[in-house]
Amino acid sequence: MTYDQIPAVRRSDLWEIRKSPAHYLYAVTHPKEPTPALLFGTAAHKYILEPDDFWNVFILAPDVDRRTKAGKETWALFLEEAEGKTAISESDLQTIKEMDMAIMNNPTAKALLKTGIHETPIEWKDSRTGEECKCRPDCITDYKERRYIVDYKTTTSCEDGAFERSCRKYGYKLQAGMYTEGVFNKLLNGDLGFAFVAQEKTPPYAVRVYFCDDGFIEEGTDLFRELIEIYHNCKESGEWPGYEDKELYGDE
Image 1 (cartoon, rainbow, N blue to C red):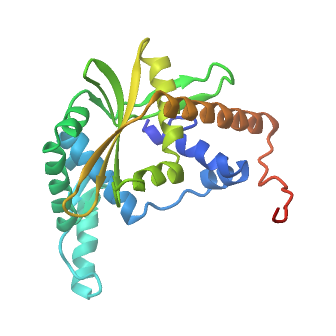
Image 2 (image 1 turned 90 degrees about the vertical axis):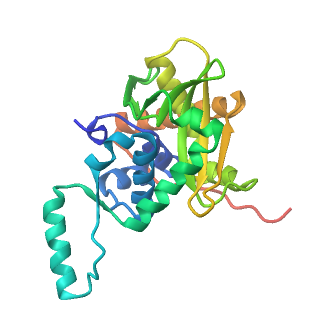
């Protein structure tokens, strides 16, 4: 059974419920095709975190013009021989190699990402709702006498304020809270930290490490508690409502 097939709720599911239960229900019943940006991020994760397994999942694509008859034939033959592997272009692979080198040249990022255990699925039952939950941390490792969950993010910018905006937009605070609760409940019984390693996708592929303070994680845990309750109640009732009615106010 693959991670996606594990019957449990994950962070991306709960982030959809934050909009409304109706958004969640539509998202799980109408899965989207992965975008080029998502495929690139997946390839970068695999190469940087699990390099020994990279070529079991990805395959180098031929440089052909798929608008021509010959190019279409070559591509069709390539897909047939790829046996389900995901194609990656030579240019994308070169970019990822340079990104990996930038991480290797950053002592903190290297220590957080290149040690420990990687991409380990974790399942647990929420103690309050009884709902099955799952997460798959990029890395769990020890750094400066503390154990950390580490998440690797590719981003457009690590400038001051830019990654913080991504945290709000994509639910990274929820991720920190939910993952910390899951790993703590399943694997640990002690102090646990959370860190993001963010890296720009354009030269010089700058890297920045963000260590989450206790308040950030606690707020994420509170949000997890709120959303898992909504998820549970909707499952129990069989009702998945959309947005609530809202009263509009004029300028004061």
